[in-house]
Amino acid sequence: MTERISANLPSRDFDATEAFYARLGFTRRFRDAGWMIPPAATPSWSSSPILGSIRARAWFSACLRTDDLDGLYATFRTAGLSEDPTAIPRLVAPMTQQGAPRFFAVVDEDGSLWRCLEMTRESTGERPA
Figure 1 (cartoon, rainbow, N blue to C red):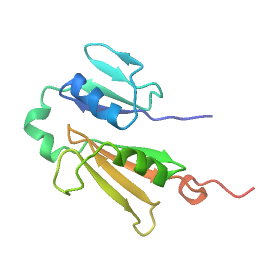
Figure 2 (figure 1 turned 45 degrees about the vertical axis):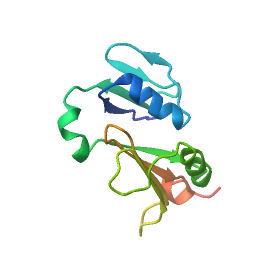
Figure 3 (figure 1 turned 90 degrees about the vertical axis):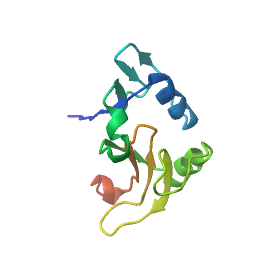
Figure 4 (figure 1 turned 180 degrees about the vertical axis):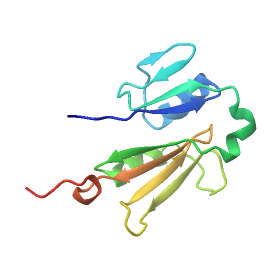
């Protein structure tokens, strides 16, 4: 059995969301008045008119797991995002927390948090062959 979870994140403005994620290397597969989905269909965005009042304290989040954390971070750095810890949007440098895989974070223009996690055998539960 294969399971997959797709994050549904809010967007105030699909044009702005699409432009932001294009800077990170994402492209669009589908878009209509209420949804926008990239080719991999991992995240999707829905229109959310209420975000204007809660953007700075939004709690929306998703995880992106990668086997090349440093390469993905280098790619995302080319987007020129602020590294100020209070900025929206922003990029947070790779770090390690005890008991968790190495990761970095991205906060998009609508305040959604992406945790970009390094996939290792330990973080995926995979057992050595």
